[in-house]
Image 1 (spheres, rainbow, N blue to C red):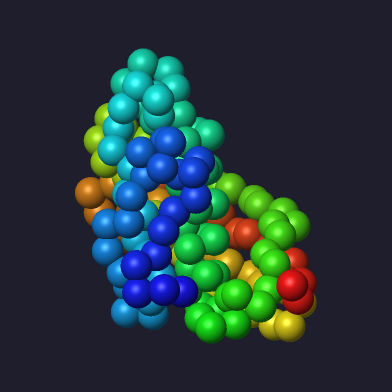
Image 2: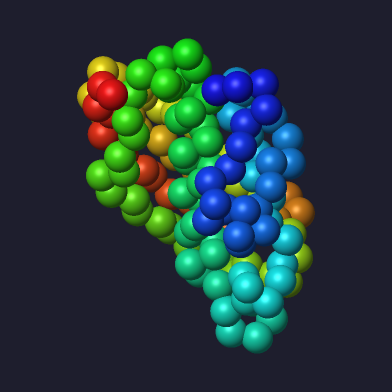
Length: 133
């Protein structure tokens, strides 16, 4: 990952941004509450939360791969999202953690929170296929 990580067009279109960088190099991605992220009135849409989690998982994997990132093609195999509490009308943040990155498969966990990181509102597991370019 470069010194200045970038987000893909989807994340930018949704208004996501890199808020901070964790000690392990994984970005913390933030999304402000807005009309484009609203589901039922006064709550974040589950798809917006899921998209944020997916972007956090990708960003964590890119950071963990480091220089090897340019040598592999990353393809998500599956994602499983657990919604734990309602997303309220304020900023949400998410960060991922790579649990395993082998030669062919990577397993990443991501969590999203508002206000208090110790109380996640959603989490996910993403399994990625890693293929040489």
